Image 1 (cartoon, rainbow, N blue to C red):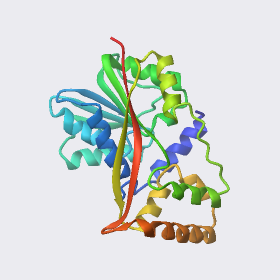
Image 2: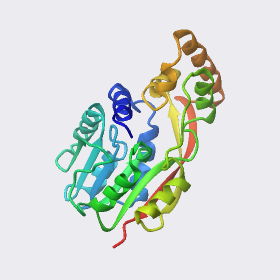
Image 3: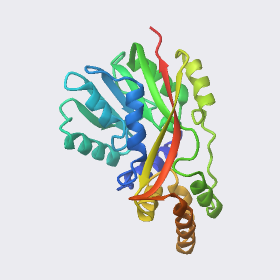
Length: 267
């Protein structure tokens, strides 16, 4: 990944003031990621692309005061919010987020029992370097657990609307974007055969405004930035119509399935 691409990612998330605050999609699946990886009290965990703490916070809860949970993110704003989330639960004595690059992990050899990454492995600019770094910082027998989108998050028609009205062309060509591609790269990097879990969660989006804010806080932002105000109004109207069949008490229900891969590090 070029330095320009990394600056673009950092900008998106630095400006994502309300990232997953009201929708809770990443928080729900972050908890499931930690559960599936069976984090135990006393474990040392590293969370890559930690965002505002979707999987870092539950990992910090799980390791307890005798363990250690560290998160890294390119975005200083996400790091600040993750540390705020840790402090809100009095977890800061054994957990912290710092600015860091998943392509160049600045940690010691065999420092962690588990490495997590919630929907972030496809931000790696140098996949062999990223996976090599993960293997290096994992103890022998440790695990790399990460989540991938099994399909468009929330509702499939949502991304279709954005793509239809945008001048940007979404590209999903990253080698870690699919389960098959990620599995191939894990094998090449020397991990043992990954264990696959398909996990389903239902989240309730409280309002159209909350969803609109979420879309501006994610990788969908470049699609929205190509549109003018008139197109934004048209897109919001189409999204509002699409939401109606999903109305439930408290908002609009979305059921999504994601894939979690857990790759053991050879002993």
